Image 1 (tube, rainbow, N blue to C red):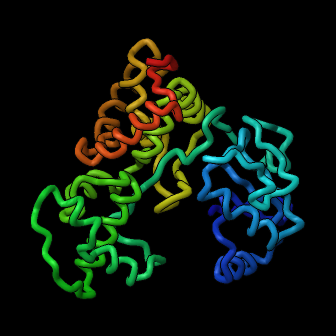
Image 2: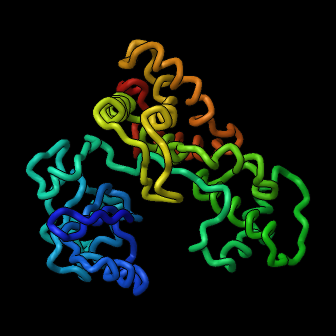
Length: 310
């Protein structure tokens, strides 16, 4: 969740989290009313909190990304407790905050763009959760690359908390990573750099590469920024145009040279950075690749390359 205080004195809340007592207390400490609540995606993990959050601030206007939908049943926003919502439009100068906050709305789909996984677990994660993840349970036994999994108690120390954090991250990013028993190598590949989530890359962005390329290039071209605030994991992150383009370097492989819209020197620099930023361990990607193939086979999604069905 990101909160910005506007010139009006009110608060602009982007991607609100659950309105817990702690969350509401922190907002009230700002000493300003919540004027606008923004849902920037159709993703369930964000949408589910907007209704409860808006009820805590009934005078606030709710704005949502266009083309809202849900799966497996396409339910209206009212089902989620979101009423009288206004629709965000790309580069809309009529929004109440237009002279302070610019917006570029991805035409489709509206999901989280980038993330940054910190090396150490955030303080907000309870140590009990970290230690529970460090235990060699069923998931570890199934995802251990055939190695013998020791059955031993988990002692509360920094090593085990770190192991729990690394296992958490890999399961979130890959659903079924290749080796939870020894997560260090895969975790090192995914942490401390700006990346596109493997799930989003595989199941969403790879389906509409031209739209994503145009959107990212527009941001890099029009906005001079030094920080990015992802909706998940760590933020704000010190990152600019080069880091953003590097995270999306995989689009160049999907689209080929004929879709290059950047100067050759910038492309070369971004390509070199992107090889590291968009590289995901192949063994860890197997579950996602299989899921993608399943969804394509049942017609849930289309498999596309450069905007055309294969």
